[in-house]
Image (cartoon, rainbow, N blue to C red; front, top):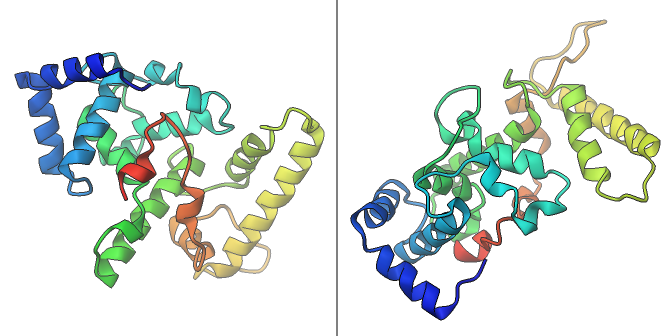
Length: 233
């Protein structure tokens, strides 16, 4: 996805047009997570991905080599269009996203350590990142990660190895999912009555189970050849 020197110069000239320049300025004004140089680099990636269109649609991700063999490819793409992540509702998917929307999603991958934050601000950002992760599991947007939803994520991850038998994948995924829900149930502030089953992991229980874990390492997923982590340092 790199640019030759001539094409890069052409891009810079075109970026001075009213539309593209205005789009970058709007992104910079509304996204305090990035400096101006990062905005310009991310905008360049956005235009390459969109084919110089003002918005990106899910099919624009089809030819992204970095995602081709990612076992949770569909979940990563979906996350870009999830209205919950975009702050546009509690359910549903957007048909297309703007550059500003694109920045909103990329910002979830920016390391907390790269920000100058107070303790309270750092906790707020951490919870936002946790909610983004939570949404990757909670497919039906009901605010709960059920056993089935958790198991599907684990199955996706394990099935990346073609040499592993599907029966083994299902067995291991089921075991891991059951263990995760038991751990969340123990951490929950809502104790179960005798005979009552734990229906699913709430966001608050999800946060508790990740206490003390550097989950940002797990968010360093290479995709889009954006080098988002390096850009945001």
